[in-house]
Length: 362
Image (cartoon, rainbow, N blue to C red; front, side, top):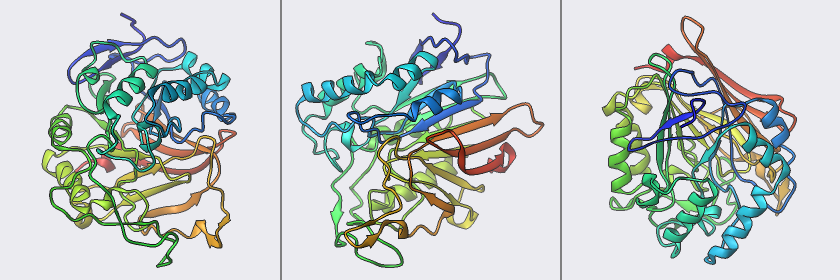
């Protein structure tokens, strides 16, 4: 068992080795990189900037490939294209790479529980991420996972949700690009109380994970949690599920929660700052990073300005070029400081929010 990097899952313990990434039970996690939406058949120069940042861990948030097939051989071939990207190979040599999936690597655009090959696709996903044969994800339905890093007082819990395997059908309502306060997507709320994003087994699991002692909790969701107005894929397609998530944070008294998301082919930082709105007693941030090599660009498409999407929870601006996210944690401060960032293809910081750990407590 490697002494350099130990990930503790809720059910099992396993180890990975990375030459430059030194984290484990006695070494705090201080540098994390994350991102989403990587076209496997296009150049991926951004990995050079990610490696230069020297992350101890890289987190994929979905659309890690664009598989879009019910043929598992096709999915495997597309994962191979990603694995053969020179920059991605450098990343894998420098730090552990973990992740969850979104629709395109799950198997189909905007797909949910009705995707017919989800069990088979799950095993292909786990094979790519080199998940051991005795890992719980090899037996459970869905790729959700939890891991814990660092010593007492500096513990970081990483929870990666599966927003695909159990998700109920979406409901179309808006015409594509229909204007409102900003450009909207095509989906309206599914208010059926029996509809779900996570499914009951994953909800029960998440409830238990939020009671695990940790100073900082990073929750990865492939789709945005906080933005709730633009009508593309978001948690608010199922508003009772979004409300249930916020209520669960309150009921479990889970402190130090920061949400990461992807999917959008743009980057932004959203926040529910009002205690009355989120109910948890501290600001809840959602840092969206997308895309690693297929940005939307601040452009006009079909006569519609993409940059005009509404998000009243947004802090600052949207960023439309290639990007990845980073989290820097300074544990040496009397009140540890967390910086969440969006970085461009050269590694320069283009968006940032800073919070002390005490500000993320009820």
